[in-house]
Image 1 (spheres, rainbow, N blue to C red):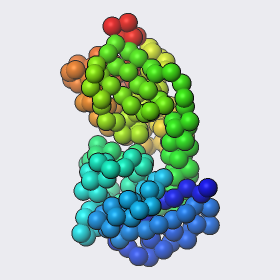
Image 2: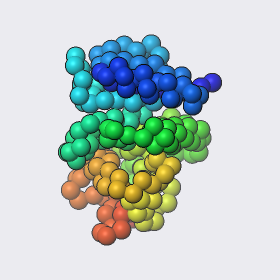
Image 3: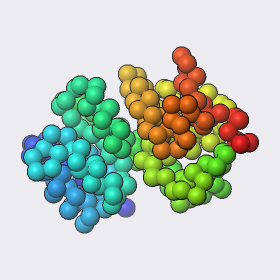
Length: 232
């Protein structure tokens, strides 16, 4: 069965162009002109991935991400004409998995979509036993994370980052390597987005995010799971 992609943008010409291209690539494509309409379409169509513009009438992209997080978990790729780093970082902090700046190559867009969908499929198909470190438990079958007895809501990117660390305690991962684990391809220049995901992850799982117990920074290289955390 073909994957369903929801394209959300207030420019009809862009929706038409992206829909036509992705349809030729074998995807089923549905569209919406703003965030409010997108919520309705998402409830009806249950998309496998969402392509989301930020600046739209009725309901913008940021508000959509906040609202959608309460009822769906499809990965989100932001499509935006805004080039300020703060805008991209905010989108990632709210739970988006990737972003492309307009104008973008349709071939690159398709590559990003395939990479994100591959990652989601791999995670969904992983039926391994739960991974643990200290009072932290990650269940790849149910995609549930708990700290002690408290369930923690993670975005798909945060979940996959944590699973990567828990699978290899003590191993140092570079930013590019982590980006490759998330997207399937490491796009040079985007590796700093890993820092945003790590910061968000720490906020959700660490007792004190400023003095992390689990995800440790290895300066000049990347990150690792503290080997001491496994025996805590």
